[in-house]
Image (cartoon, rainbow, N blue to C red; front, side, top):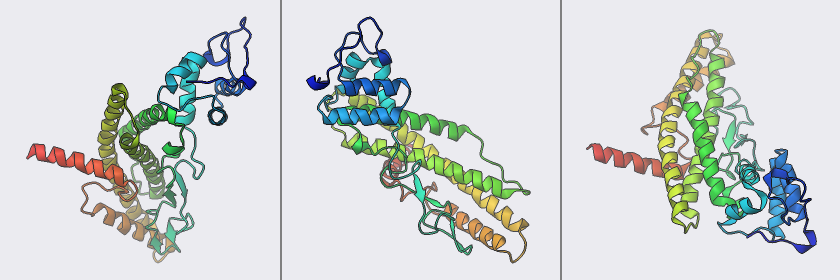
Amino acid sequence: MIKLNKKENYKPDENKSSQGNTPVGTDIPQVVEQMIAHLKHDDFTEAAKLFMLGQKRGIFSGDHTLTKRLVKVIGKKTTKKLITAFAHYPCGFCKKGRSKCQNCEGHGHINHEMVCEECLGLGVIRCDFCDGSGWMAIEDIPIGLRVTVVVTRARTALSRLKRILIRPLPQPSENKPSRALKECARLLINLDRYMGVLENTVIASKTLNISETSFKNKIEKITQSCVETAIKGKEHMREIIRCMQKSSQLESEIADEDSTIRELAEKRAEFYKNLLDQSDTFTSLSEEHPFLEKVINKRVSKKFDKKH
């Protein structure tokens, strides 16, 4: 439960409504009051830092009942904002799940002579600390909030992936094929980021120690949605890479003969064609998300067995 550090007890004015929808007349430690103030102004990062400070001081408990107890003390609205703060707390080792590829120094190619295989010609690579999600690693999230944050992140990723999947892909233009290539690259990176969130959810579902049936059912349901959406995501990745291959081919055709631009465009077209020719049913960064790949393959195999 939420404990009160007597040295930091704070008695709010009972004639005023408390910040962040906090129940009036409640004894709240100063660090919690500061956290509420930051949440009120949507300063989520600072609010999360204050929560972690409060937990170190023994103000917050670390069990799965923490969320319910927070609602009683700081209110439902403020608790929801706190969950959002941790759900979107940025990873400290990357920017939105990616970091500069050291192999090609962020160019996506090596001296205009070959496509960088490390980053698939994108110039950036997935962050190992957050699995490309761009958010704080799950193991660093306070234990009492971990299950709720995992579910919140998964729902956010599923919602954003849905928007990506229904959006028409860029159409390669003979006049400016490089534009479609760049748009596809950004789309591929964004898609793979949320695939990382789905993988984190799958991993967490197996590692989180959940005893209550309601929590177990919630995690199981969200995990199923993650796997089903990931299958669609992999199919979409293949279409994006097909678009990149076509754009590269068009770029090579309009570039000056014997130019470095033409040579690199030809290499790109060949590189992406080889990805599409791989035996895997879907083209994706399988080595990037091995745990997600495993459950996807298992799900696909089951569907195949049922049909035959």
